[in-house]
Length: 285
Ligand code: NDP
Image (spheres, rainbow, N blue to C red):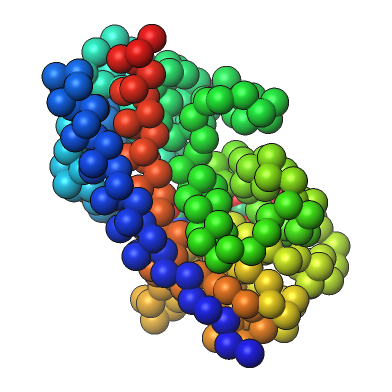
């Protein structure tokens, strides 16, 4: 059996199209566009590309973006000052602090400085807590996008065994919470997990968020499983690949995301959605 490919690019395009309509309605009703504040510290080329792509996507959706660059030498106080300004700026409804921050800056402290109501990335401890207790808050963009991709397969989440590989605050943990909310039986794996192959083999749904090229072998995958590959890795020859060995996994999985063109495009679409949600909350508070 060859898996159906989950076309994240096409699904994200649909999401952005629907969102553009909702942004237009919002802007007409309230007389201003939703706004995303973007803070980039340092000169990491990958971060600069991500930020540029996010801003382009904002412009296409009718969302205003307010960009602030800081040098690699920026101090914690300088970053905090920009965050405070954006927290106070009524044109900004979501704040994106591009990670990773340069060494020496306290990432957790800076993320916690963003007002929880403007936490478009959903990384603030208050929003992480809301997710854990099942209360409405911002949900991190990548796991939120993954849920849409899983839903697109039409496979039930309730009662399914979902195996999440990775336990970061950005992907693995919120992913597990979201799957749990949908009544999956969730197993979280990490670098100390024993018998990873066997555990992965139990998954009706497998979400890999590790950051190691093709470490999840195709032969581990349960036949017919939904496989979502969050990883973005560069091979020695410069080409991109995920955390899952795609060519072999697609022969066992029922559905699988490619890399690139799977989860990546959804992350940006969900950032736009979170920004609109922030604007709606601010307007209706
Ligand atoms: P982190 O490095 O923060 O977390 C990686 C996780 O993988 C950790 O929990 C770690 O375990 C676990 N891990 C490491 N080695 C192994 C192993 N041998 N077996 C099992 N688990 C292991 O990464 P992120 O969560 O931030 O990102 C993961 C990947 O997803 C990266 O490739 C990143 O580029 C990509 N990504 C893609 C996005 C997109 O939009 N498509 C967005 C965000 C991330 P432990 O906790 O024990 O160290």
